[in-house]
Amino acid sequence: MSVSLFDLFKIGIGPSSSHTVGPMRAAKEFADEALAHPTIGPDIADVEVHLYGSLAATGMGHGTLDAVVLGLEGNDPATIDPTEAWARAKDIDANGGLMLGGRVPVSLRPSTIVLHPLTFLPEHSNGMTFAVLDEDGNELDKRTMFSIGGGFVVDKEELEATRASEAAEGDSASGTEDDVKPIFQSGEELLRVCEENGITVSQAMLMRERQWRTDSEIRQGILDIWAVMEACIERGMQTSGVLPGGLNVRRRAATWHDALQLEDPNHRADNAFEWVSLAALAVNEENAGGGRVVTAPTNGAAGIIPAVMYYALTYLNYDDRDDVIVRFMLAAAAFGSLCKERASISGAEVGCQGEVGSASSMAAAGLAEVMGAKPRQVENAAEIAMEHNLGLTCDPVGGLVQVPCIERNAMGAIKSITAVRFAMRGNGEHFVSFDTVLETMRRTGKDMHEHYKETAMGGLAVTVPVSLPAC
Ligand code: SF4
Image (tube, rainbow, N blue to C red; front, side, top):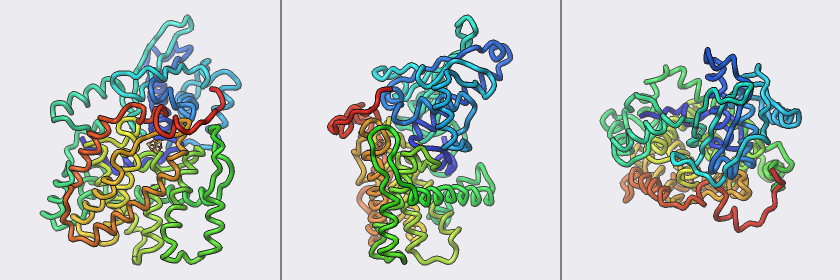
């Protein structure tokens, strides 16, 4: 099982990789396959969708219902225009039906999707079932799918096969369905590859990525991803107003940006943490607003890596900007792939430590790499950033990716930079290894009560009184 950089960084839309991007992808996949089926396709007259567990409990706030109908119409999160998309979902609800695959009229609309917030399917907390019906209401085909975090989607059989292979390999989580054996499967193996070959972490990750793409495809793909991240920071810094969802959370990044720009037009080093926090805030406000973002490795934690890259590009001395971007992203992905393969990047599986913790760890690795750290120092930076996010629960108020998520990204970014400073003061020797801290994160997530795993049934989600508009 091997997770690529391009599995971790995916261009999509906000506000959630597991609750918006994943369900849209699942719905599109189901619709495409059903319509293409030679005997089923011609008889389809309607569609039925059920959402379970976390998707049902917090789906309204995450745009899940709209994402499902948009996916059923054939939209892809990577290419859909966010502004037109949300308007189209409203239109479908108002006018009573969608066009399956963009061509077959059916009656389903967001408000007729059936929600089961208290029913958790045994396989995963983010379950969905899709069924197509003929004109007499008979079921032609049915599929159960799961959004397992970071925009990844699997069906019941794939999930069962993955679990069976995990059980065979030992009690650890794993990544994609890919069969390619990676050149490293742990932090220790990554360090061995670096030391045996006299290469950096980013070079080791490049070797791994070469299994799927050429060097120029990898480089250009990374630069394209960064271009979307950078545009997201810029848009977020210019956009004001109130975020959707009913909490009436006001966007702060634009006002903050205008004031900071006046105070510090030249980005003084002593203001670095302010600018970094602002960049994280800008991205996560864009995400919460349903805008174009890059999952990194999830949408809820999408601001951390762009903000720390912003720090690197603003405050470090370098000759080749593109080279900094490519090396940063490769090193970040080296540790992100291990988070996905050996633990989880999903708030619904392990709480926020899997989202903000993984992103913070990845950003620390990326920054350490471009600051010239040795592989053991890079691994130390990734470990420190993860260690100090252990136990972090997922408890979004009102089920919206806003409070505490937006500020939490700024805190995660600052933690990454501090972790790099710690690591670079040392020689790479340290007490707790990345592998150990990752295993701790996985076990802590396993022990964590379901109330703290993206269900909005614990923590701030219940202690902060809110009254949201009815579904
Ligand atoms: S609290 Fe963390 S895991 Fe939960 S939605 Fe917010 S960012 Fe994601």
